[in-house]
Amino acid sequence: MLLFSVIASALAPGLALLTYFYLKDRYDQEPLLMVIKVFLLGFMIVVPVMIIQRGLTTGLGGNPYLDSFVISAFVEEFLKWFVLFHMIYNHTEFDEPYDGIVYAVAISLGFATVENVMYAWYSHASFGAMFLRALLPVSGHAMFGVMMGYYLGRARFSTGAKAKRFLVYSMIIPWFWHGVYDFILSTMTHYWIWFIVPLMAFLWYGGMGKVYRANNRSPFRFLKREEEVNT
Image (cartoon, rainbow, N blue to C red; front, side, top):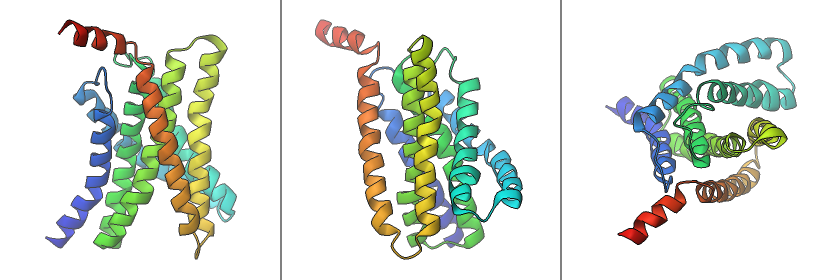
């Protein structure tokens, strides 16, 4: 019974955050089944990520910069970006800028949820440890997803060099902040909390600003206002 409770506590943060960002879509919410499929894609990329990271650790491990920015952050963010670009970016359901955030958060939280369950299962984690993971790794993956999705949304509805620039941003920016996050946790054993809390506050502040701006760029906002006027 206790193990079931710990596993449930591992699943809950990802599902709660996914629900939150799904409901933040103010104008044209995505098909729930589509969002669930992308969330499950996040489950599936855990295995290739682990294989690649194991291989890179064997050859490059030991340097905290490489561990944080390449082996951890780059591999995880690139595989999430790669799947989104090839399976979601040109999908007909991707029809407003905020959709990028929904799908990127979904795949990020799918990945983070499997990580959380594995941690809970293999380490027999306490509720306190799972609560801390909800505030840090799971929440962090959600914010990296918001960044990635925001710029994917900008790229999807831009053209030419501007679209290409936003596509680059959608990979580079979450990769950088993910690397900073991992570097803090891997190198600061005693005072990490003094750095990670301001970082998370900064990421959430910036992330919610991106949510607001993405919603305001929706082509459906005028239709909804027209419907409200007509009713």
